Length: 481
Image (cartoon, rainbow, N blue to C red; front, side):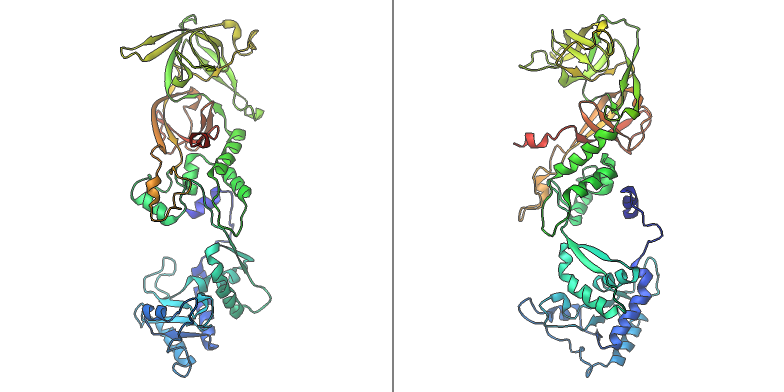
């Protein structure tokens, strides 16, 4: 999945796919050379004993009784190390340690373990090896073998750099050396980035999986509708530093809005449909309205959208008794149906509970888009879908998974205490225009006046499923003021 994510982001390693296991032989040989030079020794102590001798930041460590050659010679260390790899000893009974400085102020330099016994078969090398290098030992050496110039790590590895450099110094035979450079870990507001905490969300079924569109994983962002370009843009915007910081998730949302505004075709989708009947429109007439696909990109052309006597609009776009400055549909007020006609509400139909089930309107045939009175000024423009041609869809409105800006920043409080109960709203019975009938998973659209949406993997012919990627504007800050 890591390889898939890297390729999706637009990168390729060509023929340069390397594994640490490719170098197990070289690493073993390097360990042997350290033993021969008196720079490594086999320690028979338990993990607890070794840990107890490490000392503290203010107190030097204690030397292992096996450290000095008058107790265990180079030849004895070599013999034991070879026998460790032959499987003669049990796991945990012996380790190989680098001989550096037990009084070093850097705890990682106090004779670190560089090899341990592990008899579990390796997924690439099988049972060839019975001893395996520790990460700190393999890290720099593999970089050296592969010709790496800069090894990029997060800040917690800064204290490991001294050991990284020491091991390179013992290995290198020329002027070339890789450099370890540290940078701050990515942190986002309203998000947890810890793999452990994210795993808990998956295991406890707070989310549907690692690719849940609310997860900050690449597969989750991809499923939500984020593009590789938007994520690369976000990375460029935030840069990198050596200071721990929390980046505003609004910047990530800005990056995807900016990208989808340029590339996403515009379509009509009504999430909470309310039927509109144009009473003076011929009952059996259907017109095809030519509407541009993307005003930001003329090369995307135009599409034909069917228009008929009965339509659906958003429930929120109608109010019988509106407040001041409500410029959408209301009795006696003209509005434009985008790409079609100007209409005016003449009445409503209500059910027994007093809920509006239909809105009746009249239209002006002279105001068709592109017609003689198309430029007549009206304050509101609404999106719509022809009732006879509408395609049913399920829409999943995703929002931020946490309601707190820094859910991991509260001592002794589980981040799950700040889960946003409205991070997912499921809408069924939504209506979309017929051009979306053949939409495929990960196809992206702007539902005009609503937001950006992506076709989900769960979508099937006759059962379209859309995920909201992001709203058209950042409304979160307004809500939380």
